[in-house]
Length: 190
Image (cartoon, rainbow, N blue to C red; front, side, top):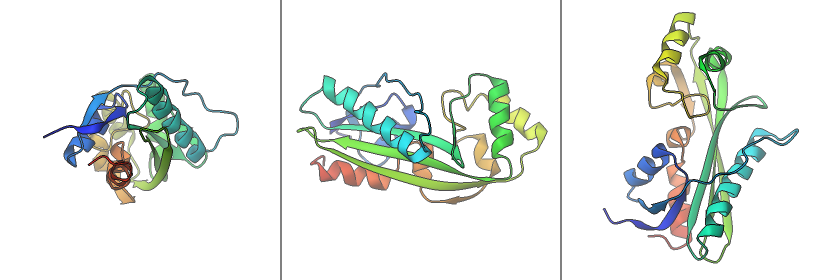
């Protein structure tokens, strides 16, 4: 499969695989090392949008005259943003918070064209989980599938706990494919 003329500003293997899945393998992958701290009072949608823009901008500044796609995905329960758990205890608390409730998985995509013009889309998907037992939580945490992601990976064991998804499945994995493909085509990537 021939590569497409854009750079993916993300080290996420899930985003790379999603793009390959739709025939849009990036010509280069370059993670963006940025400060991912929340600003005081920042709402989840504003935060994830800012992160996608900052990642894309950082990589574009090092690759001027290239098309760059940056993205960020978060899990939010109300206004609370769930960040990457650092240990089993933090992940256990996350699973207890998600158990039996609906939450949002919000992904922002930023595409910067060769001239530096930005376009941004934000996709919010509602996910409803079953009540997860203490034993199921312990078993899930022990899988370590959640390491390196916000909340969980839907493509693993967590899928068995999801009752309903209202929105984009690929966005939960890390990239809303419909929007990303159209944005890339819109700036001339074919």
